[in-house]
Image (tube, rainbow, N blue to C red; front, side):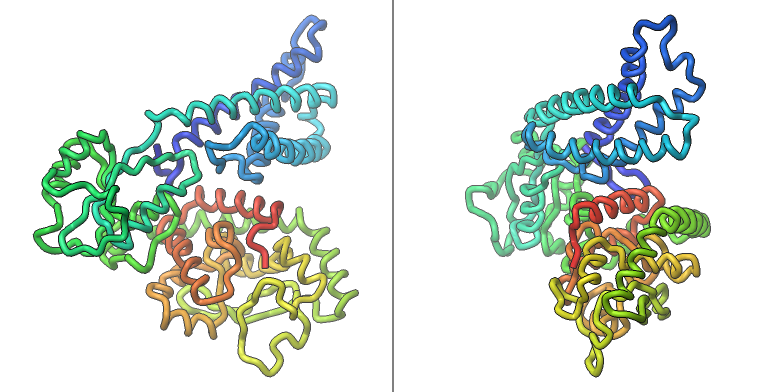
Length: 466
């Protein structure tokens, strides 16, 4: 139920839902116009020259607004009330944005009466579509039935991920195959008795995927021939690293084999990818700078009124290939935050933070001046967050593969920032590194756009702020 776009796994269910809802939004615009001018001789959209463009713009704005509120990351077990509570603020945001667009581009304005009808029709139809989809995905035949090879700690982590997966991809864990000499971390009732071949187990329990989650894959006890038979009979065989990559958008460093990174796909650092990313960086920076200019000016004034100058704060960070540069941010801490002290991890409710600083950190406004770093080519808009040299030296010694994140430019926002809370320790850095490795391996324009949408959601809902 997953497929890949530019190396990034996307749910087929979410894709179908997205296309259905895009059709609903377009149809709502035409239906609203037809109802509004039902008594006239010709439909309104026949008379308006740019009506199709208006319908397309409305659709894109509403899909963006729903994405920003996480409407395409839902749990299929959500109730109608949960759907409604998420739908209303996303429609309110969409209504505000489309009103602004119509004001800036009056040639595609469809009228207040039509827009009101369209919003009501679209809201009712989207709610109906969501209810139908959630009922459909409770059906058993849409589940993936999986067998795990291994019963150790790695298998336990993989099974926990499958059981607590809250996306549209549902898993039914059939059982576990214990290898000789392996430490058991699973319940005895979930382990298959010895003597049955792997292909017989998949046929008996109607399993369609085998996850290889054994810590030790060497020796005669590892069923490599049986896995080959499964593969040849159409059963999907996946190793633990690929399973984590697919389901959690992480590359686990604790069980990672260097050969998996070397011989696996991804890590596109071609000239074409770099050129497209640079164009995207400049385009996104220009748009966001223009949109956020009033916010930047107000923030500068507020910082000055509370704590005078300096308004901006420069700090040395490690960038691509280990080269250092000075990152630019709005100052959110007192002037003497680290005076006479070694660098410290920023923590939640840090007492060194000013009143204005707490607000701009929560809303991520303190990061906006880094657009200058992007224009200068020191950073990208999307990428691993740059860290201070003091912490980098510490993390390289303690965390495997930490230096891999420096193979591309750091970013203002990144996958770790939208998937994980603010890091304030080595343990948090390990968790964030696993997301960074996924981005370094699978970075693409498509993934950059998804991360920007998720960033907007983080800003609106205040997730991950420190």
